[in-house]
Amino acid sequence: MNREQFFAKLAPLGEAELRSALWTLYWRGTATMRERVEGVVDPAEAKRAAAVAAQPPDATTVLGDVRYFTSLVSEGAYLVGDRRVSPKERSNWRFTFRRLVTAGLDALRGDEVDTAGQALALMVDLACELQTYDNLHSDDPVEAARFVVSDAIDQLWTRLRQVHSPTDFLRTATAQLVRWERTYGWTRHGEGWVAERETPLADKLARHLTTPDLWHTAADLYVEALDNHPADRPESWRPSNWAARERSASLRIWNGLLLDHLIGPDDAVLLDLIINHPALEGADNTYLQAVLALRQGDSDQARTLIRACLTDFPGRDDFLAFGARLGVEPPPRPTRTMVTM
Image (tube, rainbow, N blue to C red):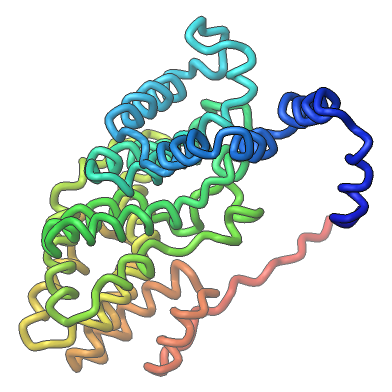
């Protein structure tokens, strides 16, 4: 119906019938419908309610809720018959997860930015934890919760950059980069709705580094973050340097960006600290050492290092391209031997 047809239908109705129709819309309609009816019935109250809703949530309250939720998940309360978590909540955990992430992001708009940042950081820590531990009833919790970790961190860093000095912001951001960056994102399988929307944190942080001085400061604080990173826990079922190798792979893009931007005469010492840091090992770090060796004119050392990379990963495109540039052939692939009976 258009406006005229609608009014024509209403013309025969009395006041009581109109009230009944409006009540039906209000009582049985959606939340949006109820808000519209309230706006017609009491415009002043509707404006007041809208103003209250527009205010960011209390960051301290959000942090308390997040701490409680993340502790319950980490303790396995959402998996077993823990009295602190009802069966309904155990099934609806993804809605609680999304609600707390949204509340943390909304709280960033307020004055308690650091408190809101703590809440959001706990949710990101939980997302990283859920890549390995089955603390929720889901094959891929981050995908199920529709939590695009890199977008949330980008909003966090943007807000921190607005309220803190560059040095304070970069001290926090580089430490979080070391803790949170992942080679294949934050979902378990690297595919799906969330994975398609994820972006490396290195690219997010690089947007904030608009001058050479900021790149140098970021690199200096990055070394500090590596120094202060908690010691890797030895695990008997993994190689002793597994964590350092994984960290080097995760930070590959960031380390490459540093090599591209730290090109001044005073940056050599800083780069040497980075590529030889004990917290970084493996083929990805060896590749960076090869690139730096070539930049410094030591092509023989660069060839030796890229050969080691190709021995570990003979099919990686970046290793192959750099080796071809130096005239290094990849090692021959082993051939299969047919065994006849």
